[in-house]
Length: 271
Image (cartoon, one colour):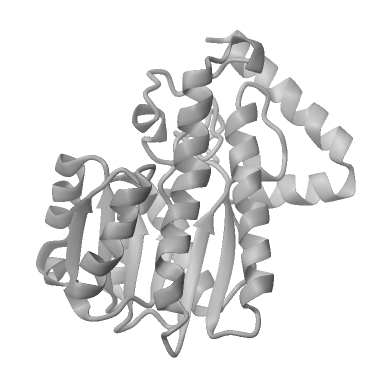
């Protein structure tokens, strides 16, 4: 689906990858409705959009609040008369601790934002998207959604659920005009650590700049994702690290898992 003149909803548009997705879509002639829980961050996105902010609408919403999401649909459609696509980008990681030391409060928060937030947005907008002549749903998973990262087990489980949810949705919608894409980003230079309530940038699982300088810029990642929409891709890995680990995991899941485990052990030891 070409994004020019389309109306796209982007979650988590207040910073990082979400903001770059908004700016990239605007640069390609799309109209954007973006939501975030942080009002000041959304206003910064509006400022960054410059003269193109006339094609940008913002809403301050908690995506884990199902009632708020259901109310959003009518409000969003009222802005431009229709919506052609959604990009479920908003997400958080967990504290870097093992499951045994992770609180249920942290577990609930990670699952609610990453999985239920994606589910609520998708289900709320789906009836309208099915009425459009062409539409697209993009769900951002993670390289942690296909290979485990110790001390990010719950985050990975939530993102793996997003992966399966998206692939199931693709199968259900295959005979409709709604296309579906699942995205597996690797290390991206964003502030997901701060957004997740964490202080120290430790490991580059869709996160801050990696120790070996291999993290992809958020703007480049956004470009890859928008290109995937325009090419109706079923699945896309973003970044050399995600592509490498995807191949490694396919060839030998156990070796790949052990490799990640060793990397995480070294990183966490340096905290």
